[in-house]
Length: 501
Image (cartoon, rainbow, N blue to C red; front, side):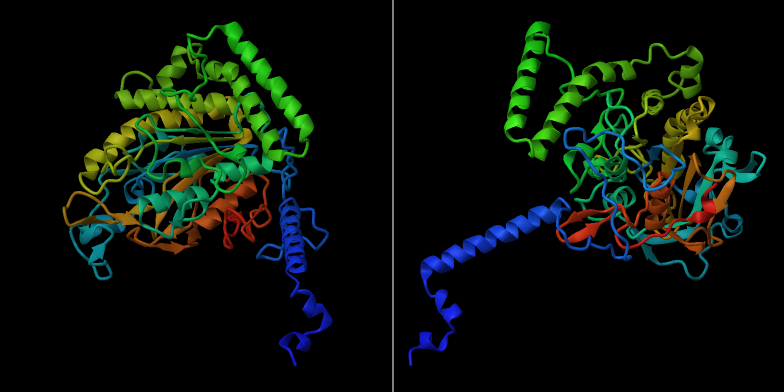
């Protein structure tokens, strides 16, 4: 008996080459169609569940208007968010996390201190480099390093038991700003604008204001869109560097420029009529139209000539270092963007093109007294003025302000005797503004500030809480990517309800 005679009639059909290729082609087409329908959420099957068993809530986005405002999952405490990010890792034990035990054990090496940390051998316990004093009506202990922010502690909600999963700066920045230590994931700002859009369609929904010295170590990852549509990445500019290609070149006449724009508009519209379901094309047209509107809106928002002398003086535009003046102008820009309804503003204090060792950012492995003092001179007064200005104008009633860094620093010195190494097991960030308790501290580090001890809080918990304050359920705000319902908090995180007003 021939081998083919052992096959069923259906099986023998596949021995016909033409029939086999035809069936294979149709099967491939069906698989492709299923993938396209799944991507657009059009399959008739039960919706994909998240790891927590919840049904995802995906925003309904019109490709022609990707920035249009969309409803939150529930009534939010905050409608906008300002993230003030300090690359390099601010020392919590020298700023906001008061530990009297460091005074008692100064110069000693008690049991339990590791012999080697991130950058090498460890030294002895060191008292804070700046004196701590009680501040405000709450009596919160804050060091003299931040005299201006210290005056506002009654408005702040501190997280003192934050922990992270890495002690390296690039991964730490990624983790804090995208929820993952690896590259390629959407930033917090991209998730928020993907979910909510913006109230002001004359300006980008998400603006990232780089430090005058440049980008942070993880660069555009900190404000990138990852696998979300490109429309939701942050627009990167500051007072020293406006958006690229914003202005018409002098050699092109205004009439010629307008004629070119009108021609492109007609060609795009005609092409869209032929391909009405091309979401990518509609998105590109929307981006071009926003860029056109930005030619008018960006110069206006960056023009601070109408700011009062009192405002410029309060922010510290003049009278300090050149870098403080530049950062102060960026702070004014941040307020003006919030004032005009931009959904997410990310303001950086510090860059990291080559490590810097405390010169370009807060990474003080040596000479912490000098390097932290240098960064504080740049950051403290303008940041405090920005928060006070937002409050005075009533903007804090609907704006959440986040002051954050990627991890803390050790309570003991490095072997060089002048710097503190990275500490992923305890650090401090604070919130203020819409929806959070004031004059409140959540969590505690141990007696040295070495490890989180009470109400240990992960970055996942922190980000879950920020999304909650924006009216978003972190377990249901997802994007289907490579077979997974991806979210900012991965498969972790709990909202810290104790900090909610």
